[in-house]
Each structure stands twice: as structure tokens, then as C-alpha cells.
Length: 143
Image (tube, rainbow, N blue to C red):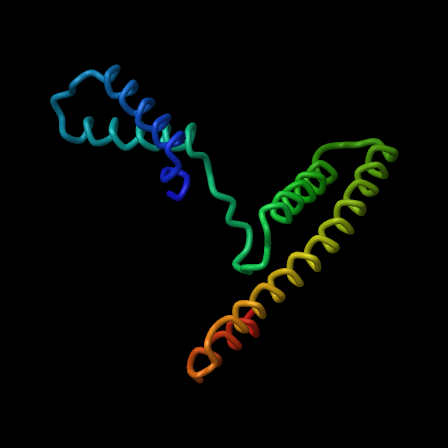
């Protein structure tokens, strides 16, 4: 939904919705009208806005790390699919190992950046409320 707040994406979405509804024929049944409306909006949202990657519940995972995780997952799936020659399996294992090391490095970097930024926010906020400090420390402990 945040993407629809951007003017150019909102304009593209509105234009596509308008074009699709001009093409739809008016139907007599309410169920058919609702079904057409629902599928049209879903298709336009998929094309124009796209999907949001929701990889993990940890707040410190960046989109770059999420994409690396997905690439590693695809390599692992290729390795487990079908009948591959021994050399192909070896190549995929090397690729997966390299991607795994890259993910671990990026994970440590993102986590440290998140902790640093959370610490900076804590320094900027007033320290007069005990409840706020307790809440932010529990938040850090949860991750």
C-alpha cells in the first residue's frame, strides 16, 4: 500500500483500472459483477504495484539480504531437482556455498547496523520515562 502513495505508481494504477473497467461488459448478476471487480483489481495490483517481500519477522533484515536468501533458495532447489550430472551438482554446491557465506556476512552487517541505529534512537530520546526504556530494551532483546 505504501507504493500507491507514490504519484507515478498511483497514476499508473488508476489508468490501468480505468482501462480495464472500460473493457468489462455490464453484467446482470451481482455475483458476476463482484467477481469481475475483484479479479480485475487483483490483476492490476499484481501488475502495477507488485508484491512486497515478507521474508522474516526480524526487523533488521534488509531487502538486499532478503533477495540473497531467495537466490540461495533457488540454487538449492535446482540442486534437488531432477537428474544432474556429478559436475553440475558440484558446481551448484559451490554456488550455494558462496551464496551462503555472502548471506551470513550480510546478515551480520545488517544486524549490527540495526543495533547501532536503535542505540542512536535511544540516545536521542529523553530518558525520563522508565516505561519507554523498558519497552525499547525488550524490543532489542526480542531480535
